[in-house]
Image (cartoon, rainbow over all chains, first blue to last red; front, side):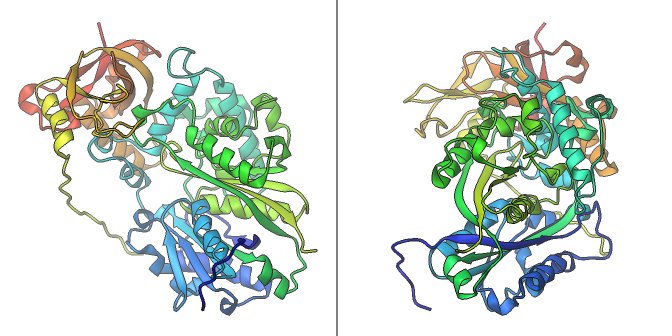
Length: 383
Length: 160
């Protein structure tokens, strides 16, 4: 293969995606067997084989899987053996960056991107705690729940203290109602239902002010998608609508929880601005569907604000637009590092059903939302 | 199903700069860094200033008094694993033999003159008195129990 010095980068699209029916515990299946289902379905539904895939990017967490070089566990089902394959150990939305860049380089025309996690196989509190700096934070027993509760409290704080007091506990409850109701209609989700804000607030407190029904569940699940360049799609006379990746932004912020104002999230704001600039989005209102990753419901209004969705509307009114987390987001299932890739797969699927529309998919990593990845995509069949 | 456990001992270096911070805790003092360029005062200290990347160089003592920025307490377990984890954490929060059944509470306090907040456990028995902005202080372990670690501070408590 020759190294191409492309003057213009190729257009790259999500051709198709597939995911598991996520469960609190996938009995009998190991991680490879769990990922095998979506990969086989993707190949069947696109009428392709592993031979059509030029490069493979897998996404998994060594800590969640309990082994280092955890991509080795899935090589038999991703078809990565003998190919240029690599792994991203970050939320799955970030794994797509690596695959996208490989296609932009001109070196590859197709890429399979996979992500898997089985939260049921490890102790999630210990695994989350290990993400914190060992000297200053880990010994204090922090987890995603504890860090996110500090964030939620800061959001509620009075003006002049750390928080801006822009959102209230009713917003947090409404956010949970919205996503749980949507999740109940998603056949791949295992959590969801119809609740009133009062029922959300009456559910047991986990860590003040977060109630049990405001926390996404831990799940076992996997997903995969196929990326291809425009050239490849033309060579294959691809007729079905695909989701063109038009914008990407990602950013990170301070790790130490005392180093930042927890009532805002500058990393997501920066990531969104970058993605919108690249996708030529002037106003977030142009986006038809949003699949965002919020492990806790109070993050839904905060993420929307930083995504620029609440400039001309209240959070409560925005929930009625019907464009947010039609899948239920993480409230329906949160399979570790697969979570963000599944948001991308969901957004692409919704776009394929509505050619011409614009979608946004968001992934998050770190507690409580330290790194964010924002994808903007637009569906369109080849002319 | 295979049941197993990975237990790997580590020996993390604090680094020469943070060693100064921990030595301060042993003496019951809070040492912050001050950026030589932008003046940003960080507690815990930063060898490199986060806003401007300048090497901060020196540690200065800050008064043991500040205001509460955020706080929370753990109240329930979704699983036996989670309950066991927080019970252990709260053992560290309360010291030996005191309060593990209650679970941990945490807070972020901005000490006077500092530009950043510091995170630690909070005295859970004072939880009802907490609100954003309330005056707080660090409570240190007794001198003989200190180990040059962040847990040389027992918890933050309401300043009375």
